[in-house]
Every structure is written in structure tokens, then in C-alpha cells.
Image 1: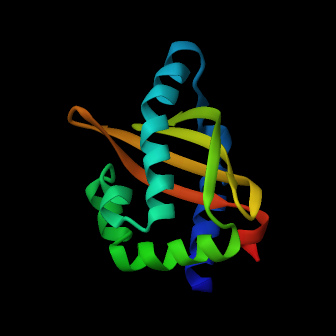
Image 2: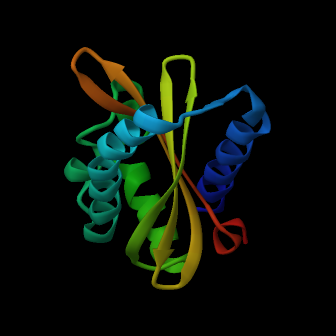
Length: 143
């Protein structure tokens, strides 16, 4: 399980190393991403609480579904539940863009930890916005 936590944290950290390459979205673009990402992110969080893989992965792109199969979801869910608890709420922090990806950053509150960073990466595939990346970071997850 520690390998999965380390992987999640490592991926989150790597994704921010080149953060200056990201363009911060403002105005209408920011509002549109916030509006698009909110129900997707909320669904993912509730699905983690419920242990519902189908609900959790319903907006994933094909690569995400391959990289995060149900077995990995169950392992990650257990880590999240043990370390930071159940999801309570989330606040939108920032909207970024890099290439074809739009990134919604949140600060989430869980039952055992308040300042959990959540990063949801979306890309447009056909008419749909699909999740192409998902990361969590917090002090307790790094332990």
C-alpha cells in the first residue's frame, strides 16, 4: 500500500515541478472549467466514500481506466480512508491549462485531515470532458 501512496504523491509532485509552464485560467475560461470540473470532482469524491468503482471511473478516459482498475481503486480507497478519512467537502482553488489539458485544483476536507490538495486533470475527447489525471496530496498521505 505504501507504494501506491508514494506513487500518488510522486505523481502529484512531478506534476507541479514545471508549474510555470502552466497557464492560469482567468475570467470566463476559469468559470467554465470550475463549472465543468465541479460535478466530476464531487462524483469522484463521493464514489471514494462509497467504494463505488463504476461511479468513480465513469468520467475517466481510456488510459485512466487502464491505469486505475478496480483493484487499485480499492487499495487507494483503503489508504485514503485509513490516513485522511471520509471526504466531507471541497473548495475550488485554481484553474490551469497546459496543452490540451485543463487542471482544476481543489482544497478538500476529509474527516481526519482538512488541507488535502486534489488535482483533477480534464481533456476534451469528442464532446465529453474526460478525467486524464487525478492526484491527492496531504501531510498524512505523505507519511
